[in-house]
Length: 512
Image 1 (spheres, rainbow, N blue to C red):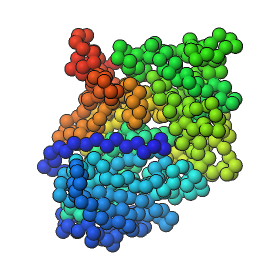
Image 2: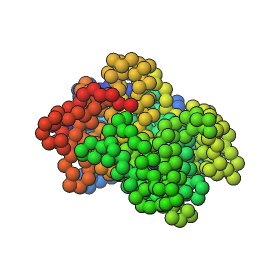
Image 3: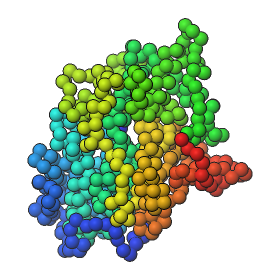
């Protein structure tokens, strides 16, 4: 999650005649040249300060049109400094605003304009109130925790829409948000806390139950780190992944969610031996614990474990190279090694506290206070639905960083709160079989290239997405298949090429 994971997929489509987005300023005004834009021309009662550090007209080059790049900071209160950047096409704007989500702890430099600007969107990004790349910036820093938790996206969207209005002379007709991982959490946070900010929201692999996820990531890292890495399966990840596929995958090698029963004990080595073709007793115990998820010594579960079918991704996210403990640095550690030290507890522990000091009997309930700042778990989306906004959620079932189970659970909670008929009218959930975290790595599963056009067509044309097109992105693999809106799943017709999407349709099926 420390990687910046943002899906940037867009194709220009015709703009509907009438818009639905709330505006932060007048709908039409005299345009201001990019270089002439001043902070004094922007205002908001929610912002204690606004400053601009760059107002640059960027010349057209290649696929990129001419656009205005604006960078600056907004403050939610004294001590808050939320960096933002907005990119507004000057000659090819399609009338839409698109905010892009963050990954991990966010921070760092503000990303350059990308493919969405080339497709005509005015875009915005934020650093969520800091420029650090780990959680140390949050230590005893409640203001920045609040900015990161929920305030930065809201204020950035507000100021970026104003900038768009000033530069183009018109307010956006429609506003969208597209984020994955931390960006998925930001997406759900926007729908819950600020339902008027966006007409359409894409929430991918959301880290929305963040304090619980932190407990799981600490737990799963500990299973492979403790006792001098006795349970670590370094060098045996493919052994485990292939065994799960052999037991559960369809003919195309896809492990579908909720239908796999696999016992790691079937791979256990004879007593007293250790070979590349089997798992030691300690490794079997560790793998079972990773699947089961964190729990107290009396068996109280705190959060779901890694899902079956995600094993291929463990080599990168979780296992790491244990041959040299000093160099052990699984990607999940970028988040797991510093979260409980700096942002999990209401009162941060002493600086001597280590991630391995976290106590699974007593500490998980202590994340409630910060959960009220960081977690996006409220299933009541009445206000979001009332303004006819749409929510598209997705999660890869092969995600070894953030398991899909809590995402599906949240969607079911929305259905329970809002009613299935009502929720179907504004929210859809897609489980992408075999896809890794935010589709960042190719693990042999399905890949969806475009989530933006489906939400645009839903918001602007009323065409709800019952399925999205997916394919393998493995070179030489021609597999295509629809990914269906939950609870439907792609079902083979029984005849024709199984690798061709035309021979599959969406039908109801039980998914756990």
